[in-house]
Length: 406
Image (cartoon, rainbow, N blue to C red):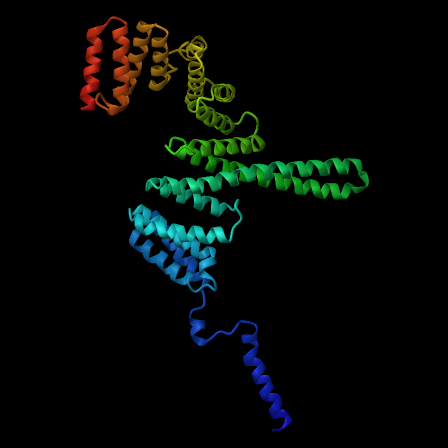
């Protein structure tokens, strides 16, 4: 064989073997199966839009097309696109009440995202929250709480990370202050500090909402550790808001109220009073007493005082509401009933009946005369009427409550 022929053969072998040696060999059949990113995106978006317009048949077909395309990925079992398609189809099945189909899809998606994400990854946190909601709706509380514990740990990591980053920049500021020759570097670090802290604050405020919502969903569960998990989430949300919001922001006041009411439920009364007092004062200053949010916070503080036996102090708080013009200032029926119950405890029965009557009138106007929400109110009103030596009226209220329950 001539040298030229040998060279041609060697070149041919190189052309054929090089893709194989590099792990890039693609057969004609494989080429047909190559992942098409545009086709996947189109199917995924079509499915999402179809869900929004309640075209569930189209949505299911589109998400399945997206899944079929995602299976062509080099590592579909570890790819976030596969996780997104699985989640989209699972969400659809939940909407359609096909929960048995949704559960394995959620779990596959979660496994994929957990394998390729850090604990504070936004998509991972949101998916975990969604799966927790799903488990709770299916009464699978232990599975839900296992994921809640993971999010609680992530929330504490986020708080520590925020503190560590701020402290690191503060130390750098001290260093540059002592080394004025590095002024140009100091300017660059200050720019990095501003963008980094802004980023941390944005994330903190977004994540605080997620932590608050999760805590609210689990705080009343019967599992013994549910309340503790809720406390951890509420504390993280509060810590993040304290570091990312102005000192009198409404969301910061709400965070204090959330944790304070949980402490009240857990009988940590001194801690509850402290937080609920701060929450109320902040809301009073920023929103005013006429706002419903402020009135609810005042009620929370009053309940903490009542739980500690400080009835006169609780009464003084409620009196602030009722000293206003009743034509323009109308506390809700829940607050009226709470104040009436306090008056009964103090032996002020006749006055209590007046507030129960106002609460009942408002509740009837909102829900009608036979709504189930009236039962407790009617029974409490009946008790107050009996204490006020008005037995006939008391019997009428008790009879109404009994009729509604039956």
